[in-house]
Length: 612
Image (tube, rainbow, N blue to C red; front, side, top):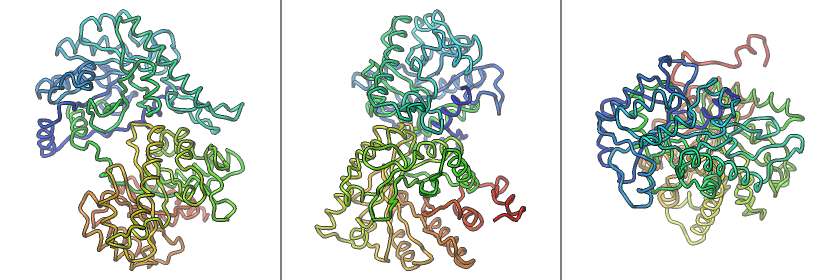
């Protein structure tokens, strides 16, 4: 269970902490002096020990007493203002503004060090902090608690009462007994209990929506009742285990009397921006400089998820169909090994299929109420891709399901998302719906109506997807289109008028087969600004049987895109059996690995044995 807990927390928020350069720090100092009166940064810490290793400690979430003390001293020296939950609540209600450079210090899990090491530091610096308590751990759930922190290493209620009475410690819920993984699919993955519909193998079915909602509400009500009774407080906050929270579970918490919701994530936090706030997670025994960098990251890169560099692999789950789970796992392991060696960072999964080739989508690879389920493959593929190789995952659905075949795409999205809360977003394959818009600098009424219809559907499914997916992942919507000719004069207009900060446009074509399209694309890119380019994904449909000269051309074309400031590139037609050719010919172009010392060719062993 301890390994399950660490895996769950790691996949929710793997924060890379870096030491800022001088110019970066200067820019952010300016930013922090200009922040709004509702902006604050939240830092999440766990256990504090005297003997934490500088690197490679047994607990990646622990921080040394020395580093925490130095961090508190730095906060005081630099004029940061540690705030209380009540301050956030008052700002949210427009009763009182937050001071500039506000920081909310939080400690999860109720480790004994919160009393023995953190509390003395709070008194020394007169800093307030919030402690998120899994109440079942304090009240006798020794199995999960001991596996997380060891025997007799949690606070007791008397210690917490002393801290609370000092006026420096606030206490919030970390759930009663949701700090664990539960069975999430037929292949026996364990996923966060607070946002997962449990899978029952004997019944071969999932927990119903009603049963899930009743379970979560009952747990959170129990947690609040215990905290309020033991500490004489009115607990209002829920700090979700592993940062795992959806819009749905957020509403369930409010129903249980916990209207202040905290996840993990990389977005800056405005007190009035919504019900759930994101937190930076301290890992790897960070120094004050590292924690500073993460705080500044919140302030300078708020809501700029679209700016990140990405390397995409689009994969059809039809390749994973297998006679049994064992055979499926073998295929999945092979796929993940190949992608991990390629060092791309984002997978696009095609989740439905036209199995009888009649031009109509008829099966899906996840439980749903409108299509047949060929096999239940999506959940495990998504979870393993995230936890095993650290990839982002988007799921593709075609718009034709609704526009041509009359099914309800929004309801299909509900079925997909409530069983796959860890996806990063949904990719809507739009066929030729944008053909007229991309082709022409001006749109006639019919073309305008087509664009409008696509975006109405997109907004509908975006809201459904965001409701059920983990808030920590900053859910995005991607529109996927294919280019079939060189007329792309309307691309700039399409981006200017239609895409919002949460949206990306995925453009697919074969530049070797259609060099005229690629030339037209290059011309259009030169007319776009940086932000517009950052919303584009270019993915090549590659001929796996390309000649040596053609592989060289693909390489050159990828490099051309990079030279034009395109930060999101990919391959549109990745197949298991083509993995070796992609690895050998496009590794340098697609890989996010910047060090040749860590390159690994997964096919070398087979080559040595003469296996093809």
